[in-house]
Image 1 (spheres, rainbow, N blue to C red):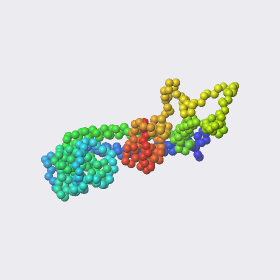
Image 2 (image 1 turned 90 degrees about the vertical axis):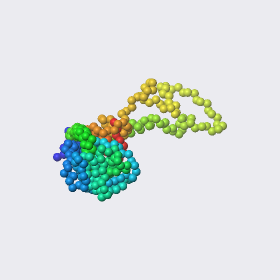
Image 3 (image 1 turned 135 degrees about the vertical axis):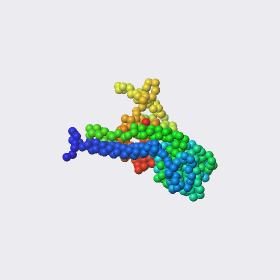
Image 4 (image 1 turned 45 degrees about the vertical axis):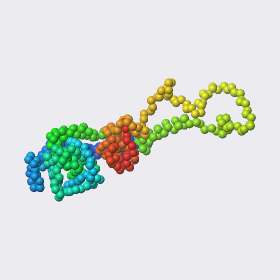
Length: 389
């Protein structure tokens, strides 16, 4: 039996079902993304606390360890790369990147492969044991470090070598290598506690941002705008047109009918034609009409103050749907943490809360939380414009 409300209609139930299904789907996607990042942060925190090397790991390596040197990590499929032109790299930093961008297995321009072999990470240095010899990057002499954000390349500058060089690794080993290199460098300068504190702060911030399960909507909460195709956006567009069209008609001059007194007055008389004297005014019993403004001058607008000061205009939107959060397309600040009920007023993309960026509108009219990302609005015809608050 079909469910109906007190008026006998079923559209309210259909609206509540669609809204609840969409909100639950968005919540599940956001919660899954949150759990993945939480697991990764806690894995990195555990690794940072238990990151210890061993001298046994160096047994069998074709290199001699220094006194007190231990091996943290090894990788056999590494390539030595060198930069053709001299470049100044930024100073090494103890920054943790729990969400590395996707990398492509490519070699950047201006970088050539010089050798290949076994990469060894110790508490003193990074070593490549290649077919042409050994290349060392000692932490105490390191002056520059740069991880390519789009390619699996890490470049290093040291004091005892003029040319910048580094490693090209398989994409699957890049994230683990970069994090362990950060830990090894921090351990060498006795700053591992700073990396651990940074991870603790990231975990605390991430815990506070856990998605909240949305409340269940009831049929009584359905708006009449749900009956209109397009919902609130269609209603808002119709209201905007209803305000703009009368304003344009009010500002324009009325049409002049042929044969009227105004048309006759505007038509110049032929040369030599005697001009008839003006007729005497005829007294009428009707009240005197208000004088029409001179042509070329706009009539005073309704709502203006006596001193000509501008009055407050209607709430701006610049094409954005009417919403209680003040989000529009007019400008302001980017929205990195939108309100919990934003999807009740905007058409959110599937998996909206899993986005990492600021609030943007895609070309198909949906909104996404992928502003600033390389693949912003992927699958929704691309990026269109930014929402502001």
